[in-house]
Length: 170
Image (cartoon, rainbow, N blue to C red; front, side, top):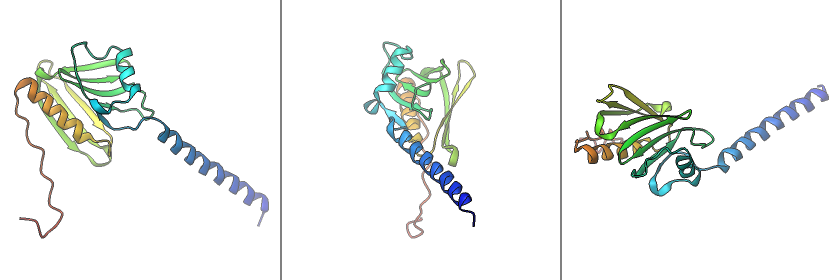
């Protein structure tokens, strides 16, 4: 066996392991991802919202989801007591809660939670994708509650999960 080949393979394997460990440390060093309610907001997110004038002075933040890997705030779904906002590449797509006609959502496995919001006033649909294990159902529930509070609409109940224990099945 060629000792040069073994040494080279060991060096490559070592670099790969160090890169993986470094990546995990980098991911773990920043703010924790996922849907945040107002009481869980990270400072970077509240600073980003303020510096970019995303919220109106009379709005109350309800829920926030940063869709970026680095938690930069550059792509985010934002829910207030008046609007749902999708912020991306410096632009905001905004639906007033009072103009929303329909909200549909589904857990789509590896894609995560997909929420589609139909705006009756513009005829447009906003799509929010929340990665798996990031509390997409929390954003969906908060959106439905805010919409109901603003419009008096009744929101459909979330589908019940199938029983997993065959003994408890009806």
